[in-house]
Length: 413
Image (cartoon, rainbow, N blue to C red; front, side, top):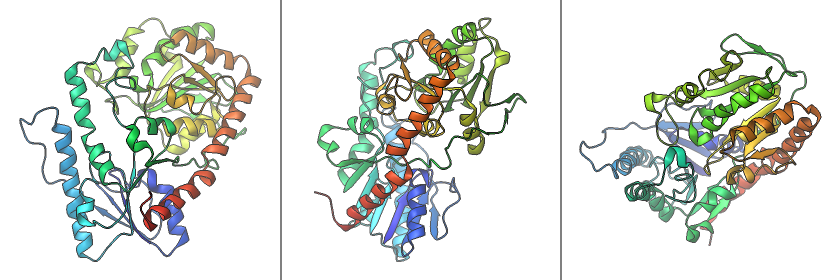
């Protein structure tokens, strides 16, 4: 098969699929993205980057600035695709992530090539992530709702062009309009449980500030790409006074970039960390709280093997890989009782769930694990079992490959 993979941050979610197809042999695999690949690509994958040749138009209505950005990216990607076609490349299947607009016009280049789209999330002004946090979000105005409706324009255009779609969780599929859900397969990207795996003999880890932590110590971890409210940074940080009161020897490690946001509104001054540390001034022992920034993946996994309790909180939004990686590493997890997490964690069986907005409840749940290592270990073992049964690459990858073959063979009815 000739397969084209399109992802702004190539290879993104396609890395495991690319490796499997490259290992099979006999395929021509082409990738397109906006920058240099973020991973070492399998041998035989041909990569083409495309650049943007213009920016947003000054004075554009704010509700359509994002739409214009996606059209600009879609135009750039289509121009590069047209060059590929001119060189003689005709895909039997296009796999594309539509989130940034790249796949908008690919059907104009190859009208007969089936398009399989990776769908992450469909936005709603009410009932999901956008109005979840009354303190920081408030009641959305009609203008906010109008902006969000326009944000979905790219997704709706892509749904219309896609021959089939795939999304990683049932919750994420549930965000899409009901008429489209029957055309979205639910298959997770897959977790490499051989790499994200427990190690009772894991070596101590030296944090960027020089602190050394080791397995068996009361280490509590919290990790996201960025420290931001969408992933519960405010609830976690507000839990620290009670956590330290109940367990003064606890050492807290917070992983993630500290400036800017991936999702939601930026912080006043650019850092949510600073906002909430100022709120907690004088109430916590900062010498036992460590902000690492981003960590190399191997050191992140080492941290997950060391932690005595890992906390994962999220608005009703896209589920992070980090939660499943923590579970696969057999870390005892305390998560938020929100739909993405409830799909993975059953309270009292393979972890603990708490109210997203209850810092003291979170602190008490974490301390209950620190004080009962046997219970924590049982949760960790059950969590790894969940990931092995439902999210392991050996489970997910064959389903992904079968879907690719099916969509390439014919349009699903």
